[in-house]
Length: 300
Image (spheres, rainbow, N blue to C red):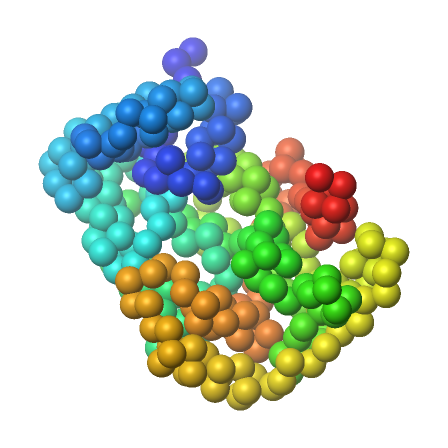
């Protein structure tokens, strides 16, 4: 039998390359949609993943339609601001429609952006705007929402503070928070891409736990007692966001410090909480817990 073909945008990125590997491991033929001027080293890397390279102008709907023609699903792992999420990704969407591709998975991979107050989280506002555009297109669209990337805990998401053995929280130490590793997201996206019956949204969380739970996990993993530390209320965090936006606006950066703070505010407010979860839809996907993730990091 001929293996199913999938077109993947953003394959050279961190999450994109993981999705590519997950699709290939399931026997899929994966076309990496690349720019005609993609560097030789990036081409070599993508070929090493077992991908077929398909150059196309990302701003040309007709050229992109030719690149995705015959694909069972177009998967986006593009990362950026409005020029990417609303620009390049919309070209990709229209190209999929023009080529007769039946399904499209946009680059959402986030917390519950459908419930976030408009105007309070820039990156999620972009995803909400693209959602509106995608829902007007004559194609089956499925978004995968996964909470926060567990890989960022203690690094880019510094709520775990090893130097002082504390777990920071805002407002409520018992607010449930969703975390999923990038590899688990990629495995689930690959399964969803192969499933022609997916609904509009799929919600997943590799682990859900509060700041208090995190402190208990870190105590067990490290053998040192971790406690929670209240960094302030949600109003305080909102004020910190405004100050950060003024001091270091970085309007051209996808993830300035204040963007991460907006994301954290949504998590601790409960607006970003995912429910119900669709973890059980693909039983072959094994979920990594925060305990496992932190144990691996400690032993690495």
